[in-house]
Length: 230
Ligand SMILES: NC(=O)c1ccc[n+]([C@@H]2O[C@H](COP(=O)([O-])OP(=O)(O)OC[C@H]3O[C@@H](n4cnc5c(N)ncnc54)[C@H](OP(=O)(O)O)[C@@H]3O)[C@@H](O)[C@H]2O)c1
Image 1: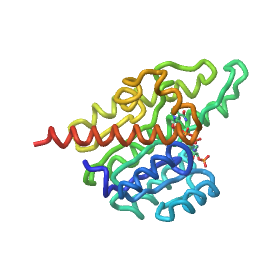
Image 2 (image 1 turned 90 degrees about the vertical axis):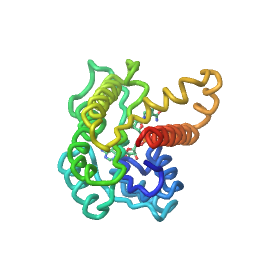
Image 3 (image 1 turned 60 degrees about the horizontal axis):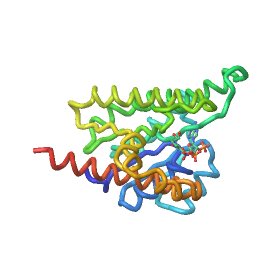
């Protein structure tokens, strides 16, 4: 797989890591579709990059996930990469937490990637160079006590991604966990004192460095795959 000429759908692509990733995919000459709940955030992203395709969808809601799949596959029949990036993080004390809010966090961070995966799989299976990217977190491996639901959703998504990769290994669909794989490939090989300045300089610098690490990791992964295929 090449990093150019793909049609990439990024959930939550208007801000943060999703937007930084959208910018990198655009720079690599891919068609990029982003969705999110806030129209103003999508409009701001589009003002910066008019070539972005944008649409309001709330992936925390089952009916909107079905609508997103229907719209995206109809409007972009060559869609071959799904990036499950949308996520929210709440700091909560479990004893005081409300189920409705906890369920919303679970729905966005875990139900959505699982449901979107099952919805998009048949379409992706018919495309060239198909891939699913699930954005997890370092907190999947070491939970932060103050974000109990968030950390658990990311651990669940990491686990799901491993099983999905195993099940799809006989197919051309690549299943990638950019967070886990770039941590392994880049962050973990850099001494902590060296990575701290750029990591903490600003949120913009942090999202940029995540997107850069993801793209570097994808390039390496696809190059290795191309080298090993007959
Ligand atoms: N920032 C970090 O340090 C960090 C570390 C590890 C992992 N991550 C993961 O990276 C991903 C992106 O995080 P970020 O830091 O870039 O956060 P962010 O700037 O808050 O971006 C999250 C994006 O997701 C969208 N979103 C949230 N709920 C949504 C929903 N129900 N439907 C559709 N879109 C939704 C938001 O847009 P709307 O509000 O308009 O919907 C926003 O554009 C998340 O999965 C996060 O868990 C982040």
